[in-house]
Image (cartoon, rainbow, N blue to C red; front, top):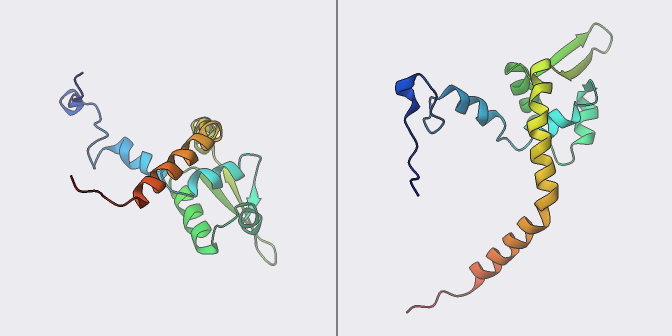
Length: 136
């Protein structure tokens, strides 16, 4: 089986294996630990920072701030500041952010369906890794 991939650059196409590929830079956004979870928490509508922090068990204030800032920069969420005292800030998915949710939900469904298999594989691997190496 031929496992080489064509170089699509000569045809004006992208090559996701190249570091400077535009789609690759966007794909990198979704490889973060918290990106999908933050976006999923916003699926039902706008939420405030502390509400998100309570929903996302284990996220630090710093990481939530960084993730929200990145998602806003990339156009996947909006940040709305209301002129109240104290100021109220809501975060919400944009049209672009909502369009990515189908893919993220499919990955979440796959993870739920195969979690037991993956965890069993990890355990098996870890047990084999503990065994002493035998020389031949």
